Length: 239
Ligand SMILES: C[S@@+](CC[C@H](N)C(=O)[O-])C[C@H]1O[C@@H](n2cnc3c(N)ncnc32)[C@H](O)[C@@H]1O
Image (cartoon, rainbow, N blue to C red):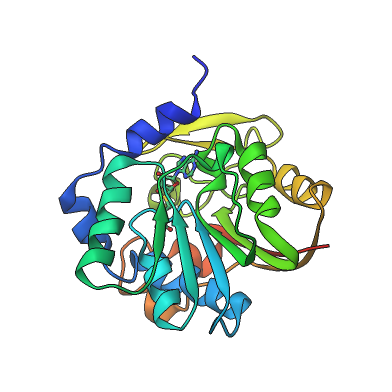
């Protein structure tokens, strides 16, 4: 069965209020301690900058960046997540503009200083169009920062919890992995990096965030990230 963008988007609309509440205002444990610090460090001073949060989910990162002075636009196709983000904006306005759209069909008239896409591209079947549309929405010399599950060290079945190691068997193939919501697609790291380069960007930095032993003790699943990164964050500049 070939999985379509719509299949994934539909699955993300099955997310429950309970799951959204548990996710929290700053994101889950891994966002709070690994992804957010890396993304914020790479973005630098965002005050006054126009930023696109591509695949914004609940909009938590858009809100963090808006509070720091960025002029935010969030794109999210899933009904439930889009409505949640819009409701948050209505309740506590931060000037965030939310757009309900599939990134693979996104065609922005506005050109942004930066695009940030947090844990999204590996969930999109038509990821090439999504990446191209994000880069097309940037001004010249604009910043493209995205995080994905680290494709070199994927844990598809609680392997670390059981064996304290990860085994890589099929790195070069593209394949889907079923998740709580939708699917993720394994693709080699070079697939993403070369595509971003071929789409007109220069990659200037990568972060493989590591958790300290002290923070890892707060979460039963944290130990893995003391030893092997779950995520990789790429910082590119549009030429
Ligand atoms: C792992 S969540 C990350 C959400 C958010 N960026 C965050 O960090 O909390 C993946 C997100 O990608 C969105 N998504 C899936 N397919 C998409 C597509 N074709 N275009 C844009 N977003 C998509 C999902 O609806 C979901 O919000």
